[in-house]
Picture (cartoon, rainbow, N blue to C red):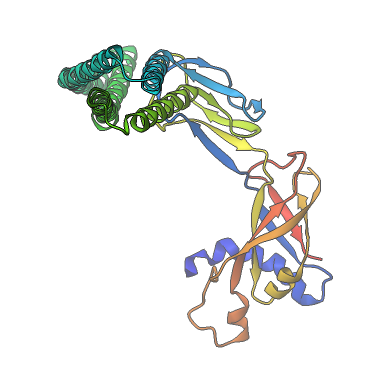
Length: 366
């Protein structure tokens, strides 16, 4: 820990004024703003980007939109299944009939067929994704070899700088294409296919149970049908939530700190689309000697002055470090104990968002 002493000496020297009879202690700190990483829980192809870096946003402002076609289709399917479940319940409540049994049989056969189709298509989709990944890796290998050869020729003056730049760009594109193919393959194998198979199996099982209950005429068939309706309603709510994820919005007011997204890009599930610096009050750390800790703890408010001239602000103490930032090898003398410093996190009240991240401030105790 002794290596941190040089970086903390300014804080110690400034704060030491409080021990010399000065009316208040002075400390230096650096402003740090709160930020959030925004993305989508579903991922997909970007069709629209509505913001740029440095833009001020209100809470709920649209950042980007993903292609909603597949998600909308899932919602339509869930709504249709809810309608079937509701119709089955109405039929049972009015008395079982031949048509109700036939309808349940058809729903069960349809669900089983959909499950079988999911299993059959899974292998083909995995094979296609694996082939795409292998092709991307082959292209990457070729691009790297081509770049290496071109670089060697460029070094001896046998090819132009333009040829070398083109080879370098081709290598970068090939590496990016391989990374995308790998992400798509992983998404398919680890998330999409397991989720689709589980949902199809559950739907087939539920439809089979419903058909058996209706055809057998068991006393609890209405209760089972009601459960099917609730399950279908939950599926609709889930599909609606996934569709909402196609529109990426800012969770709070703030400024776009960074965004690297363009129409046509593939955004992976839970991948960061943008970073938003929120308009929450910023904070800073000051470092105080152990002799000043009691005085700082008793302070109700601190005064913070921006070194850039942005103004003076009130601040409150939010947290104290539990351990010293610098510990001498020998603390038996008063001089050695004096260099023990502790980090203090302060929250700065900045309603007009005047303080910028990374700027320095001077903090005064009463």
